[in-house]
Image (cartoon, rainbow, N blue to C red; front, side):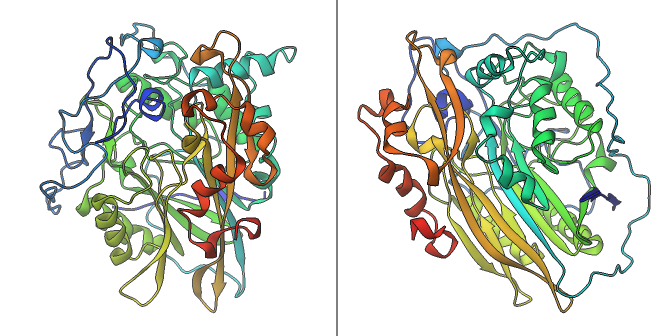
Length: 473
C-alpha cells in the first residue's frame, strides 16, 4: 500500500449558510431570523470542554479578546429560506455499513510506540491540505443530478474533477469535512443543521484522502446522536480521522500516520461550537491551553512531525484574531511543526513562527472554503496547501511550501432559489476565466460583474509572495 495508518496511544452567505455569525459582520437576515448560541473554550460544561484532569490548569479568556464568538449570548441568524426546525429523531441507531478495508479503531490497544524507527536520510513525503468542505443543500442537489443514470442516489465526484489528480498525486491528502455525516440523526440537509450523505465520505476516499478533520463549529448540529453516528461511519473506513472522540481515552489517543516511513501526528481542536448542547459521553475538543500542551508533548514522543489543525478565527474575515495569535504562539512554544487552520471561509495569512529550539513552525491561518455554495466571491476562493516533509540528517523539516488556489463555481437557475444553484464545480484558479466569473451566481449579490483579477486578489492580497504559484507572483 502507498500509505498506511498507525495509531499510537498516549496518556448569511457566509453568515446565512454556515450558521455562525462573527462580530461586526454584515448581516443578511429577514424578520423571521431567530437567535442561536455558540460555545467557545474554555467552558465548564462536562462534555463540551476537555475533560477534567487534576494536572490541568484552565486558562481564562482575556477580557475583550477578539473571537469568532466571544460569549455564549452571541446572536446567530438565519433566513427563512434555509430555516430548519430542530427535532430529535426516535429512529434506532443503525450500524454503519461495513467495507472491505479494516476499520480504523479509536480504542486504546497498545502502549505508546516511542521506539526509534529507521527513516532513510533524504526520505520525503508530499502533503496536500484542503479547506472547508461544506455541503449545502445545493451541493446535495447537484450530487443527485450527477448521479442520474449511475444507480446511485448521490455522486459528488464530478464536482472535484479539476483537482482530483492533485489529490491522488500527494503521498498524504487531508481535508476538513465541515458538514457532519450524521446518518439517521436527522434528515439529509444543508444549512443550518447540516447532515451530509454518507456518499460524500465514500467519494472523498475515492478521491484519495487519507486524513479527515472533524472538529468544527457544526459538530454538534445533530446533537449526541449525530456526533456518534459520524464517528461510527468513519470507523468503518480506512482513513485517519481526527477531532471527534468517543471517550476520554480516545481523546488522548494520538492519531499518527506513516507516510513513506515518516511518522506524522495530527491534532485537531475547535474554538467554538454553534450550540450550548452537551454531547453526552462524547468529547468535543475545544481549544484549551493545558490540553494543547499535554497533547503536543505526547505527540512529539511518538511522531517525527506534529501537525495541528485548529478550527478557529472570525468568519468572513481575512484578519488574524487575538485568539489565533495566542494559540499559534502556544503551538510553536510546544514544538508543533505545522499549523493548518480552518473556519473563516476566506483565504488566510501564511507565515513562519519561531520556536524556542531555533526551528520555525509553518502556520496557515485559514485555507478558506474548498466546496460550498456560499454567496459572495470572497467565499468562493480557497487554497490547497502543499508541502513536503523531508528527513534532513535526522531533522524533519518542511520544504516546497506553496498554495494552489481554487474557485467554486455555480450558477442560479430561473427559480433563483438557493437550493437550485446548479453546474457546481471546483476549478483551479489558474483555469478560471472572466467568462465563467461573469456567469457566477455571486454576481447577484455583489451587484456587479466579478472579474478574474478580483478573484486573484483574494489570494495575492493575503498570502505572502513566497507561497504563491508563479502565475500570481
